[in-house]
Amino acid sequence: MQVELTAVLPVEKETLRNLLEKYNYEFSQYDLIPFNEEGLYGYRYLDSYFTQPDRAAWFIRADRHLAGFVLVNRHPDCGRPLDWAVAEFFVAYPFRRRGVGSAAMAEIFRRFKGNWQIKYHPRNETSAAFWQAVAERAAAGAVENVPGDSPYQDGSEARVLCFCVE
Image (tube, rainbow, N blue to C red):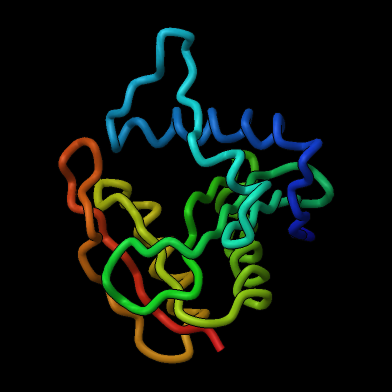
């Protein structure tokens, strides 16, 4: 399957907003954040990905089909050195377990070198295993698994993978 990243353009913001709703719905099984009275979760940082240079938004495409997104920023989740962090990451069900997510992250790491942090919810065991494997493949050295600076809404301690990509 051919996987490519395309920068999310300002005219595509609504498409990203739509995908973020699906992502937040799925993630709510872990963080227990309910949607609002309009049935939406929203994403308060969405506009920042189009106005701030320390953020980047990419669509993931698989065989030219929209398959998900990855949001990258420079905001630390723990007290370790940071150049880049995965803020949000989503691959739709039809494209999971087919190498799409791993290929997308390999391309992100090719484009963005330095010290990385990837935060994940400990109850999301599939995500934990995915991120550990992705980090180990990309890391130039050791991958550290440390507590995050703040817990999730449900009280779970966030975990953060810290590693360097050269």
